[in-house]
Every structure is written in C-alpha cells, then in structure tokens.
Image 1 (cartoon, rainbow, N blue to C red):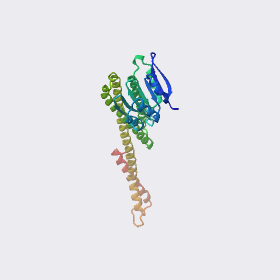
Image 2 (spheres, one colour):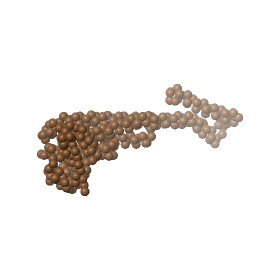
Image 3 (tube, helix red, strand yellow):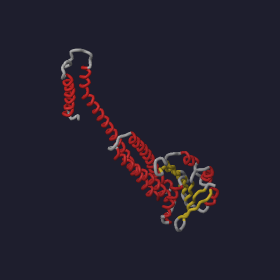
Image 4 (tube, rainbow, N blue to C red):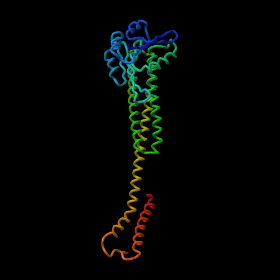
Length: 314
C-alpha cells in the first residue's frame, strides 16, 4: 500500500510518521503541519479534492506541467518548483500546496528529508508552514547553485584545454556544456519570475510575515541567474577563441602548403620544359647541362624562400 509522510509540530520541535493514504482523513484531525507524497496517484487526487478542496487544474498541473509556476487561490497557494538533482539530466519537480495551517508537497522524498532535517533545527515557535516553504525554496535554490558550480568547473577545464588542443571532441564538450548552461539559465529565470510574481500576490493570501524570507530567496535567484548568464557569456567567448584558433591553424596549414607549392613551382616548370620531346633545348648538348639546370631549379627555389623570409611570411 502506498505510504505518505506526515510531520507534526511539538513542544520540542517536529516529529514525523509514515502512514497509509487511507489513514490521512483521521490524521487531519490531529492538525499535522506537513504532508508529503512521493507521486501523484488517483487516491491522492481524491484526497486533495475532497479533503483539502484543491482545484482540479492545480492537480492537473502537478501531473502535466513542466515549468515553474505559482497560482493563488482562495484557500491555498499552489507552487510548482523545478530543479536539478546533481546534474542537468536529472530534472525534478516539486509541487507544493500551501494552505493556512498545512503544507502538502508532492515530489522527491530526498528533498523532503533534507528539508525536514533543516526544520528540526528551528525553534519550536518558529516552525510554521511559512518556514517550511522557505526551507524548501532555499533547498531548491541550493541545488541549482551546486549545478552551476559544477558547470563552472567544467568551463574552467575547457578554458585550459582550448589553448592546448582543437579537436572535434573539445567542440562536442563545448556544445554539451552550452546546452546545459542554457537549460539551467532557462529554469532559474522561470523560478526567478515565479517568485517575483508570487511575492506580489502573497499579501492577499495573508502571509505578509513570510515576505522577508521569500524576498531573500528571490534575491538569491537573481544573483544565481546573473552568475549563470556570465558563465554563458564566458562560454561564448571560449567558443570564439576556439573558432579563431581552428581558423588560425587552418590558415597556417594553407600557408605552409602554398609555400611548398610555390617553392616547387619553378622546379616543376623547368623539369616539365626539359621533359618535352623537342630538340635544341638550352644546355641539352652540354656535359654540364644537368648541373646547370639543377642549379637553376635550386636558385629559383631558394630565391622564393628568401623572398618569403624577407616578407616575414616564414
């Protein structure tokens, strides 16, 4: 049977217990502070609709929505948070129903457990649904910060490599990192906009005491977005350097080939001329003809090399 986790406020702090979905109706009479579900299921939908009067559209967003959002209803606030668990490929969402006296969350149990530990460190009188939401939001922002730091370290490694090697593998690394930075930037931007919108509607919900805490989260998201945007600009600069180095390398190869072709051009011309099946060619009857023609080839080739060096092309 599917389980859920219930947190109660006590004089010492908080305590939690694991119960079945069928027991939730009875649990509500004991005034829990926080209820957490791992996944949305049909019986959980029925509980939210019947017992907590959650709007059907909010439940639909829990299942289908894939971007952060916040909506204020008459008796609750619905917040959908998107974050990354360690890396970009592990995208997670955490849904929150914030009522006057109760927080209901749906999502990662790991995030629930981490937040519960932080909550247990608070003074009993400070433990409220507002504080729970703030701790959840702070944990989500911290997860995004950790991903940003990981991407920054990868960026530093690529910056070092770009001057040592210019190969398709490095270009692939730059492309992958660019995708990850853009994905993180887009999510953080959405979270930032959600918190800005949420803060403007929070006083209507009667949660003015939470504004200072949540404004701090919003400020962290603004700074994090600026940091990620800086990473993106740095990566673009690195890509420009990479492209310039590749182009310079290609030009250097083309210059070398051009010089080789130019140096061998007189040799090819003279040897082709003397290879024609005609009579009375210059020096053809001389026993020194081979040495003279070879000297002419060498003289013209060294003349071109001297000219290139004078022009500082070599």
